[in-house]
Structures are given as C-alpha cells and as structure tokens.
Length: 245
Image (cartoon, rainbow, N blue to C red; front, side, top):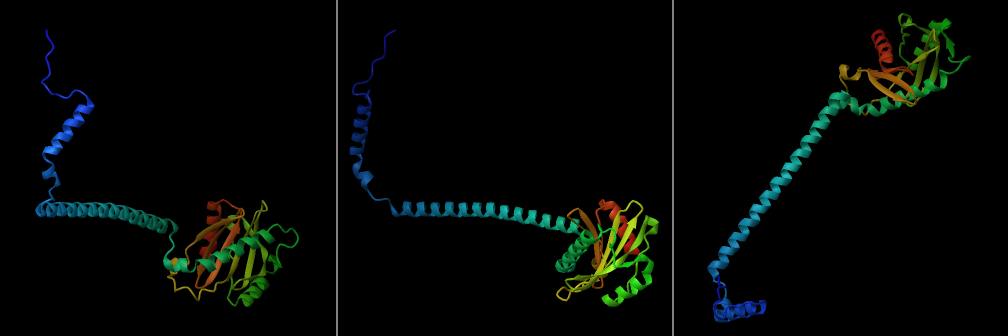
C-alpha cells in the first residue's frame, strides 16, 4: 500500500506551526485590536459579581455550619458538665469558700489523725463538756453523730482556726484503728446569692493527698467527713452523719 502524501504547504515542524499561527493573527490583527464592546464588558461584570456573591454565600454557609457545630458541641459539653457535676449556679458561686473549707478539713485530718497520745484536745469521756465548749466557740449548737452501728467510736474533739472563724473537729476510730474526722464551721457566703435548700445541702466529693472528703453546706454552716477510705465506704458514713445532723 502506498503512503498518502500530505497537501502542499502543510506544516510538519514546530517552527512551521508557529509561522502559520502568526500568519493567521496577521490576517485578523485589526479585529483582535478592536476594543471589547460595552455590552460584553457589562455582561462580564455582571457575571463576575454573580460569581463573587455565590462564593460569599458559600463561604458564609460553610462558616455558619462550623460555628453551629462548635456551639452545639460547647452546649452539649456544658449540659453534660452540669448533669455530671450537679452544681447549679448558686452552688458554683459558693464554690471558693466551700473548696477552701474542704481543704482545711483534709489538712486537719492529715495533721491530727496520726497522733497516738494527743489526737484530740478533749477526750470522748468528756463528751458533754466537749460539745458545750465547741458549741460556744462556734456560736452554734453542735451535735456529735453516733457511728457505733458503723463500727466507729468517738475519740474526742478539738478547736481549730479556719479562714472564716473557729472550726471544730470530731474524731472517730474503728477497731482496726482507722480514723475518720468530722470538720465543722461557718462559711462566709455573703458574696454568694441565696441557694435553695436542696442545692445547698447536696453531698459533694473531694480528694487530695490520699485523703477523701464528702462535704456539704447547710444554712451557711459547713460539714466535711474526711478519711483515706474508698469512696463508697466514705459515702456510706457521710450519708449517716448527714442524716443525723
């Protein structure tokens, strides 16, 4: 079969293609040099503005979706935190004073519970005198809970200083030598709004330096039961103390 021949003047090299392209441009150079008609310019402008508007709306929708997702996540986190913490705004406003109080309780436990000969100022044998003395110093009638059914007997008590005034500490001990302390005292809550009875008296848990505490506030008076016990065991004791007081 014979090879077909190319038409005359058909470019076969890159330079030939460039020469042909320039020749075509030369034929229509006047048309290419003419200014763009105003109508086409206006149409191009409208198209550019429309595309810009579409792009802005797309970006706005994207950012709005992201913002909504962030707000939703924040809201869910906040609600979840409120559900788990169970601390309303009034209780949160009271938190600094209560947190200082429970730290005082834990510190007092660490200092006095290891004592062998002088764990208390007044022994349980003088319980009536102890209660009267501490009630007078704290300006509030106090009561010692009975934890004998839980296996704990009163060792005695002492007077201690606190950030907001005098504090009382009652110490209990079981047959194994495990000691538990009940720390009491008034809390300065003038800066906090009034809390409902249910939120104010709720049991709360804190733990530091291997000492755990359950504490609560009742009409401006704080209570904290502290010991290095498992949470469930300490909660059982705290619930009984809470019930009696």
